[in-house]
Amino acid sequence: MENLSVAIVGGTGNLGGALALRLGAPGVKIIIGSRDAEKAKKAVETLKSNLRAGEIVGMTNQEAVKGADFVVIAVPYEGHAQMVSALKGQLAGKIVIDTVVPLNKVKPFVPAAGSALQEAQQILGDEAPVIGALHNISAVDLGDVESPLGDVLVCGDNAEAKQKVMEIIERIGATAFDGGPASNAYVIEGLTGVLIHLNRKYKSKHGSIKITGLGGGAKH
Ligand SMILES: NC(=O)c1ccc[n+]([C@@H]2O[C@H](COP(=O)([O-])OP(=O)(O)OC[C@H]3O[C@@H](n4cnc5c(N)ncnc54)[C@H](OP(=O)(O)O)[C@@H]3O)[C@@H](O)[C@H]2O)c1
Image (cartoon, rainbow, N blue to C red; front, top):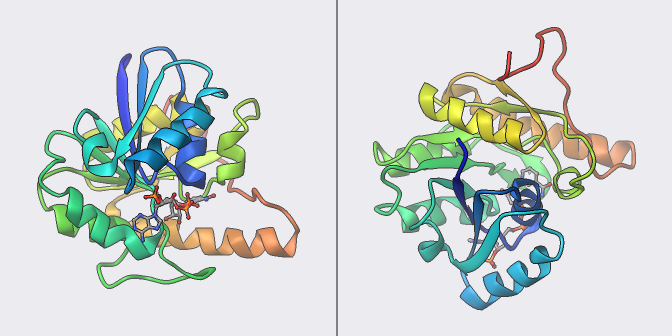
């Protein structure tokens, strides 16, 4: 997977911007999506100065997904279903990476579909596989490109797509683990609620998870 084109829907936000910085590498094209093309372009100007390599452009979410192989959904849960529905019809042949945690303020909850991932997959049907990733890693750690990243649980029902997403996770410096089928997503998404609690309790901004006893993840 040498050349890579990744659209980040909601890329003007905390997670999306930080992920863009991590993705910056030769051969990588990052497309920052926003509901507002001007806001996307502004975000790109800010991100550009810290991008290590690669290309970065900004446009509306609808335009952003057109040229991408991978589409990262990085919007708050409140806008999740509506955003995925709005992109439906433009995602064939792409892999959707869903980072969204259903939260009511800071409290996690299980949506009717079972998880945000399953909600997206229900909306998209067979159009594109949806893979969950990056829920338990903070934007703070992602954006600090010089610091090592921890472990990322990747889940979903399409094994080939999941493997490709795990490779991207490894490329950004984290250790990817196959977290199982889409039916596991509610646990992984919900774990972020526990991390938010831990951050508050222990006065941190980047509590994360570490998997032990398994060896090294996707590369092993
Ligand atoms: N932040 C983290 O550390 C972290 C870690 C793990 C997972 N996540 C998950 O990643 C997702 C994004 O988190 P974030 O902290 O980056 O969020 P954010 O900064 O609050 O929002 C990201 C972007 O989403 C767009 N947006 C906001 N409300 C929207 C709506 N109702 N409909 C459509 N788009 C909307 C905005 O972009 P435009 O105004 O430009 O359209 C915004 O810049 C969330 O679902 C969160 O649970 C976050």
